[in-house]
Amino acid sequence: MAESGDFEMFGAPAAKEHDEKSDEQFREQMKRAQKARKQLQKEEGKARSNDDKLAQIIVQFLSQQGGTGTDLFLLISRCVAQDIPSELIIAVLSLVDRKASEEIENIIKEAKQDAALVVPAYKDVHTLNPAQKKAIDDWIKNITIAAAHKPHRTLDSVLVKSVSASGELVHEISAPFVQLSAFIMRNYLAMQETNVDVKKLRDFMENVYFRIIQDLEEMMQGQKVIESTEEA
Image (cartoon, rainbow, N blue to C red; front, side, top):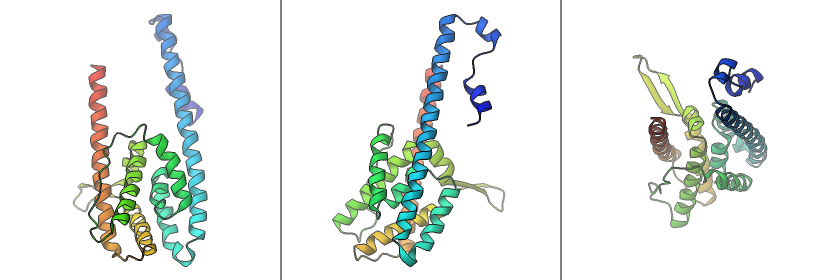
């Protein structure tokens, strides 16, 4: 964040404002400002760290894919370009990549403390055996918790807004993110010698993300209600 932004957001009150406040109020305000600055810097540091880890995981992951890695690379690149959080992309890759799985476990331990979503079980893919269903459920659970870790950014990046030919505002789930998730799920099932049409997997993942988005929106709306009640 630029220094001018830091000053505007966290700078000391103007002299006139300070005169109207008691010293105790002023000190309390500055404490909150410093705490907010440190938290923001902490979050920015984590974001850079996760982005670096994501880049390393992607390079290693794609090097193991051989000739099948091109499509995945393009999809991952488009997800990154859409500013989809690193945690979410790592969570998606974790189904088939050991390094991503290890990394998402570390992220999830911290994210769980802030997650407010009820993680549902998805049983829509009926052809899977119990072990496969559990693996998919655990995978979606991790994706859900990662999504709730940064709800604003998840909504802004995964929920794509566009204007239709009739001029209406349309909301759609990011196609590259859905496709990437479907391809990863397909690769996992292929390793299990189970073949499922990728279109079915794409429809399945789109439904999963719609439900996650709905829960995120309800969670954010609930937070706004609580905040407005506290301010009243």
